[in-house]
Image (cartoon, rainbow, N blue to C red; front, side, top):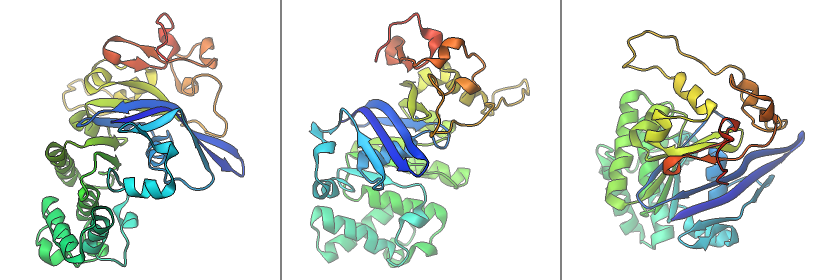
Amino acid sequence: MLDVRNLRTTFRTEDGPVTAVNGLSFSLQAGETLGIVGESGSGKSVTALSIMRLLSRNATVTSDGITFNGEDLTAKTEAQMRKIRGHQIAMIFQDPMTSLNPVLTVGEQIAEAVRLHLGYSRSESRIKAIEMLKKVRIPSAERRIDDYPHQFSGGMRQRVMIGMALSCNPQVLIADEPTTALDVTIQAQILELMNEMQRETGAAIILITHDLGVVAEVCKNVLVMYGGNLVEYGTADQIFAEPKMPYTQGLLASLPRLDDNTHRRLQPIKGQPPNLLNLPPGCAFAPRCAQRMPVCAQPVHLYEFEGGHEARCWLYDGKVPCR
């Protein structure tokens, strides 16, 4: 359904070029949930915005193709992309308070998308907006359709965003940190709502998050990013049971475990994320890696293991590079 090949996104800044995504490739199938994880600044959100072509003018995006249902999105005009965004590919942004228009009612914002993409009349789009608010479990939807974003709680605003994103039955839903700043109870409700909608529509989901607990709960496949690079890819079972890349191992070691009776201390990853203006040569994680070797200063391939599991690390130099 969605195939991204060798995506590279660079920003022109006063201090020099910043490569936020460096040669990223992945595929997404219908009904699949792909989790993209990594620290802040690893390139997760920029990847999504590059696919949607929603970046600022100082960004340069190149690739060997971003193919959606057999059509190359990079060859589309801006007018053609506007027809795709919000309709065939929809996005839930990180902060619903800044993503929703504060001077329009939530009902009007949902109805506007429906009128634009599906050609509904004003009365039809209002009925659809009420239907979507009910679907995302907003109480008293007929009354609350005329409320403004500031009249909703954070969790309710996120539900509105989900309702808006799903109002035109997209084939791909990109959710960028959809549970950030929500308490665990509301977080679970939002995730269950997304799962329920996916079961109903068959949409594929890209879930961008730094929360590995969320990934373990809802994702089939996981893509780990560091310094703009894909450093590990595999099924959720592979990533959590047999992480190959030291960075992925470090992320998992820093998580508290309810089944751990040894009362071990959490193991944070030492050091700081890399400066994208001045990336180290070779493996970007090498300066923080306890297993670094002299060869880590050289560019490293992705190596493939059983079941499509991949990792970018010199520890596996005995294997044949997959790409």
